[in-house]
Image 1 (spheres, rainbow, N blue to C red):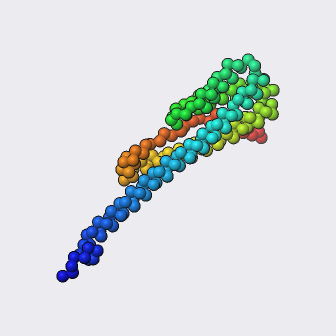
Image 2 (cartoon, rainbow, N blue to C red):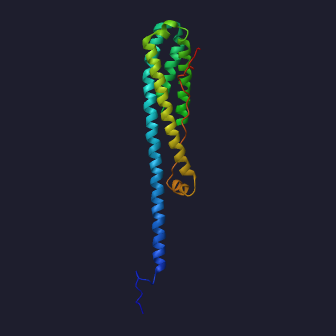
Length: 195
C-alpha cells in the first residue's frame, strides 16, 4: 500500500484542478490588467485633447482682439466668439457634451475667419496671419489627439463588449467610453495652381 501520499500519484485529479485554477486565475488577472491599461490609455489620450483645446482657448482672445482692431462693427460676432470660447473652456462634461460646446465654438470661429476675409488690411496683418497659422496648427494637433483618443476608446469598448473579457468588465464595473467627435475650425483652402 502506498500510504495515500497527497502530493504523489494517488491524486492526479487534484493537480489537474490546481492547474486549471492557475490558468483561470492568470487569464482573469491578465484580462483585468488589460482593461485597466486601456482605461489609462483613454485617460492619457483625453488629457492630450484637453491640452490642445486649452491651447486653442488661449489663441482665441488674441485673434478676437486683432480682428476687433480692424472690424469694429463686428462687435456682435466677436462677442459670440468670446461667449462660445468661454463656454467651451468651462465645459468639463462627457466627451459628447464637450464636443457639442466645441462644435459651437468651431462654427463661430469659421464665421470670424470668413468675416476677416472681407477686410484686406486685416488679411494682410502679420499678427492676424500668425494667429491664423497657429490656429491651423492647433486644429491639426486637436484632430490628431482626437483620433488617438477615439482609437483608445474603440479598443476599450471592444474589450468590454467581447466574450470572455466582458465577464471581467461587468464584474468590476468597467464602462464604455464615448467617442469625441468635433469639426475642424480652420478650413484649409485648396491650393490654386495656375498654368
